[in-house]
Length: 143
Image 1: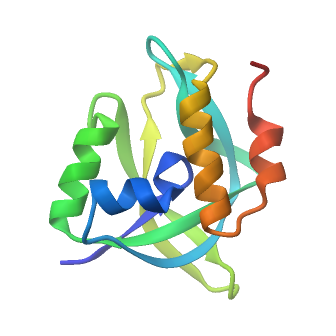
Image 2 (image 1 turned 90 degrees about the vertical axis):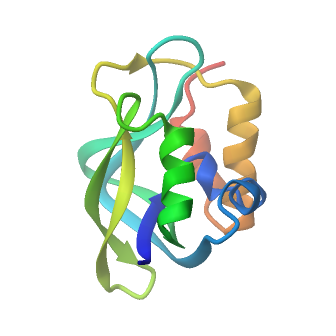
């Protein structure tokens, strides 16, 4: 059974997703309205996550995944202890609203600074998908 997965961080990167989840296919692009991008950490470098914030939005890519791809993502995201899953609404570029699954970091994580290589992977994902790189740069913590 196929599922829609919402990517906003390193899983925007097409090359990374091609080896992590070879069966995944880009389904569309959109925005998460009233959400913001943040970087948090449990220990060590920080990783991308999202949190509710009225008036903000996060550009996303929606992937169509099967159970095998979801299992691979679960392992990568440290589900269920590091990230949990939540079904959330996405406004597509067409204006239509759909629901998909996103990984959201455990609420015990604290703000932190991501590694340069992680940021580069996300930036490549923005470029891969024609997303506005200035958005990402605005939310990166000072290095």
